[in-house]
Image 1 (tube, rainbow, N blue to C red):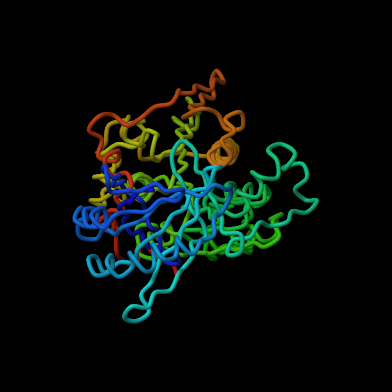
Image 2: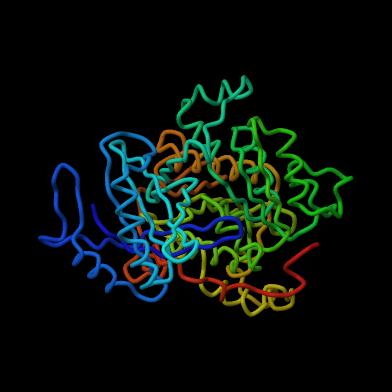
Length: 437
């Protein structure tokens, strides 16, 4: 049993309590007597460690596996002994977390109804983020879905338990163009059921050679609407929920929707949104799967094509440390320079290649496939599905390079933001160009 300090991450549809650090008990502050109890001095010391905006959580263990219910002693400790004291000090609810013998977590908040009256709000899921994303789901609020015959082949590869996890996580796809539309279709066929699609753009005729599910009749429609319809047509899950967000992730609605997700796919080619998603992966504990394609063409002749795929978040290197995102490109995007063709023409050849990417459908298919496989590995822990680290493919001579486990460099600002839930809205861009109604 220990106290912990949490910060709040608030999206559009859900609120997450992010455990930031532990306040471990000192001698005499915890008593073990078949059960475990805390001393008043322990509570007071933990409350004194709270900074503005931080809340207090009580974490304790039970001797059974799976999602844990509450004993009467648990209720007395959280509701009667802690809720009023914590709210009086912070204005925030006390958070309770229980661990099972198999590592499963359950969680809840005690919300104030009126003076000295507290109501329990059970969490839908509890997550641990690291090299793997481990989720425990509330058996009633997020019940396990039954699968049909449409998923027999899929389940035969990684089994029913992993399939149940994939079906219940909420997956966000930022950018529904060439790679994002293929990711969406692949996830739907695999059996993912909960989607958040974020993109402000509309389908144009020039998109038809690279956008899965789009037809000529879709020209002028929002890409998220086209992708949502396609997911519902091809999805194999029993109950599919698709939230189509026709905004940029650099808008408040798009950013809030991203915070609602358990895992995100970064399928955008602009530096600024990738910079935001890079920071979000660490500060708000939402792993991001990112990829990029670089095809160099001179006078209609392909010189070379490479692409890379990587998962970022706690216990992994960020895009900056991987060399997949350049601070100079981010600054140019923030200043609006990448919207000026004349400015891009003045850049040196290497910089032009980094901001002017070419792509064709077969390239997108490869990137999307490897991104989905990395997500499956993130959820299941099966590295034989998606590999052990960042992947770099060179079309010629046809070689895939894989990095072993890599971490952020010392002093990296993203590594220092882990679990801080810091407000990233300073990166948002406001204006008519970032939404399509």
